[in-house]
Image 1: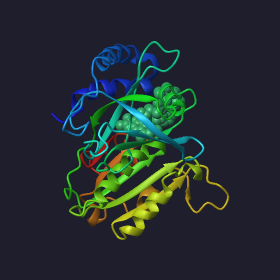
Image 2: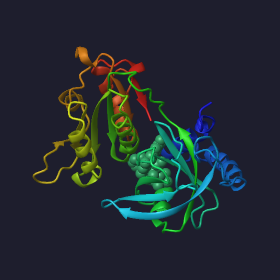
Image 3: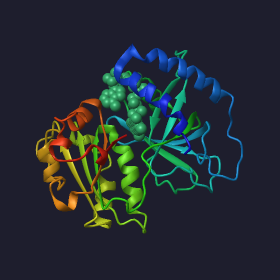
Image 4: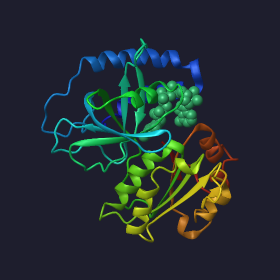
Length: 299
Ligand SMILES: Cc1cc2nc3c(=O)[nH]c(=O)nc-3n(C[C@H](O)[C@H](O)[C@H](O)COP(=O)(O)OP(=O)(O)OC[C@H]3O[C@@H](n4cnc5c(N)ncnc54)[C@H](O)[C@@H]3O)c2cc1C
C-alpha cells in the first residue's frame, strides 16, 4: 500500500468536516485525538531512506517564510537530511497536524508541497490564509525556528505517458497540486504528456504563480499552456472575466468532442461550489463537454 493511503479515510473525514461543519466534526475530532496521540509517540528517527518515503509522522523545522501576495505565504521547512529529497511521489500532499494556541483538539489539514519533489533538503508549502481558518492562521503565525508535524498522503498517482494530454482545472488555492504535477510532468525528460491548465481565481492578485507558469510556457512551448479566469478582474486585466465555464474550457482547447482530446485526463481541485459546477451529475460542465466520469479525478 503506498505511503499515506491508509490515512485517507481520516483525511476525508477532516475534509468533510471542513465543508459540512459540525455534522462530521465530532468524528473528525475523535480521529484527530487518536492521530495526535499517535504523532506524539513517533519521532524523526535517522534513516537511510528519504523521510516521507514511507508513512509516519515527522516534525520539521521552519526555515523561512515569504509573503507571496495579500493572503498567501510560502513556508520552507528543513528536511532532517539536507542531502536527501522528501521521498514524496507525484502526486502527494502532506497532512499537517498542530495544536494551535487556545485549542484542546488537534487540527489536521493537508497541504501540497510546491517545490520540485526531487529537491534535496527542504519542502515548500504555499498556504492561503482564510479568516478564522484554524490551520491556515496557525501556519501564517509560525516563525523561523518553529516546528510543525507532517505525514505523507498519496494523492493521484501519475504514470508518465499514460495519457497524451492532461487538463488541470483549479480554483483558488487548489492550484498547488496542479503546480506540483505540471512541473513534475514537464521536468521529466521521459514524459511527453501535454498539459493544459485553467485556473479560476477571485482577483488578479490571486494569480500568485504567474511567473512560474510563464516560465514553464516559455520552456515547454506546445506542451504547456495556462489560462486564467478572474471573477472580479482589475481594470485593464488581460484575463477572462468570470468562472470556469464550458466556454472557458472550450476556449482553452479542452472540448472533449475534439478527436485529440478523446483520451484527456481531467484533474480538478477547487472549492466545493466549483467542483459541483464542473462535476454535478448530468448537468456538470465536464459531462456537457462530453467527458466520461472515468476521465475525471478530483483531488
Ligand atoms: C489534498 C489537498 C491539498 C491542499 N493543499 C493546499 C495548499 O497547498 N495550500 C493551501 O493553502 N490549501 C491547501 N488545501 C486546503 C487546506 O487543507 C485547508 O482546507 C485550508 O487551509 C483551510 O483550512 P483552515 O483550517 O485554515 O480553515 P477552516 O478552519 O477549516 O475553515 C475556516 C473557514 O475558511 C473558509 N474555507 C476553508 N477552506 C476553504 C476552501 N478550500 N475554499 C473556500 N473557503 C474555505 C470557510 O469559510 C471556512 O468556514 C488543500 C486541501 C486538500 C484537500
